[in-house]
Image 1 (cartoon, helix red, strand yellow):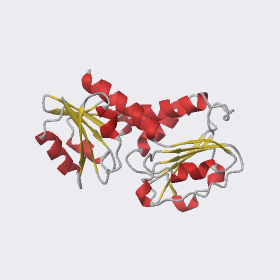
Image 2 (tube, helix red, strand yellow; image 1 turned 60 degrees about the vertical axis):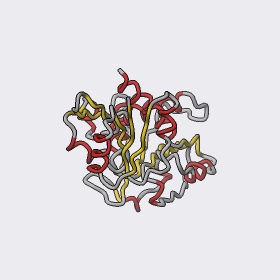
Image 3 (cartoon, one colour; image 1 turned 60 degrees about the horizontal axis):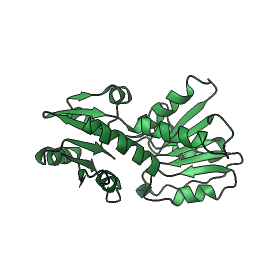
Length: 237
């Protein structure tokens, strides 16, 4: 069986080494368009493939069907090939939720049940998954939670990233690719958590930890490992 990853400017990807630890034939396709990536994975007769930036939404129009999670979130990071039929799935939501909840419940420096004021930086293809994960955790717990999406080009209901002020939030999730060169002024005066989905550049993770109020900060490697195992189990089922 053969598997792979399609994305753009992904030379930093750790996916190949993750899947090869399970002795899977895994290829990385660094392409300029989702159409080019699809052509390559079809020509190579892959049995399944992951989808990363910036194609998690663009891929949907080319799929024959979506699993319930992907349908609900409208973002796909994994595709399984069933007899030339392409079915999309979303494991980003579950992987992020499980990762965040694991660290919150097992970290002595965090005394709250769950953050109350949450900021998501960026509105790319993974953001719907992060939003869904946070809502899954907090909506049934309290109506006092606040989730704000900040973006350079905000859509309806979002806020310009220029208005982001770190000290207003006790959870900050950065989804902006590290190549964009975003910087954050961690001016927090109360306990906070910083979760950066980037794993190839820990600059902001290390910077957050310099603030004495930072309970903990985490890069995206834990989330990547979790969703990779979910994808592997789905492909091989």
